[in-house]
Amino acid sequence: MNSPPFWPMQEGINEIIASVGLHAAPIGVICRDNRIMMAVYRTSHTASLIEKSGLVVANILHDPVLFVRAAFSDLGPDAFTEFEVGGRQVYRILSALSWVVYQAKIDQMTEQKILVSLEPIQTELAQSEIVPINRGRNSIIEAAVHGTRYVLNRDPVLKQMIDHHVTLVKRCGGERELEALRMLENYIS
Image (tube, rainbow, N blue to C red; front, side):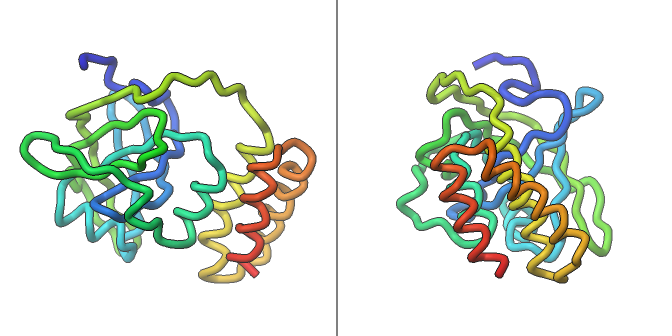
């Protein structure tokens, strides 16, 4: 499928669930200046798998519960489906609305992160769904991102940011966002 280089991504940072093999983790795909990249914590399981495989799947979905689960625990094999790209087996999340398989090349390594350039090699719009902006959904994603850092260092500033987003989730979110919030609170307590 020939698509613009960012499709279905937008300019800026796009929060997706990356899958490498049967491992999944939320990551921001950065689209700027006709480049697609991601910064991954070097000590993470995701970074070591990207280094080994050279492929990563960006799973685009709107399920806040799945996002929180992937941020704090492993998804089971039943959450994935296997397919072939260029003679290689890859896995995507079964419930993804869209997905992009990227060739991943490590451009830079620091003590803390690797910067990975992404070149799309296969893109699929698995399901078209119009999803309006929901502040509760956006806030649970922000709270989960802060939460992954908070569990490592218990920084009170991060806790304040989480609390701010929790207030917005409670005010603006639906049942799925509230379920994700309950999960998040258990993970970070």
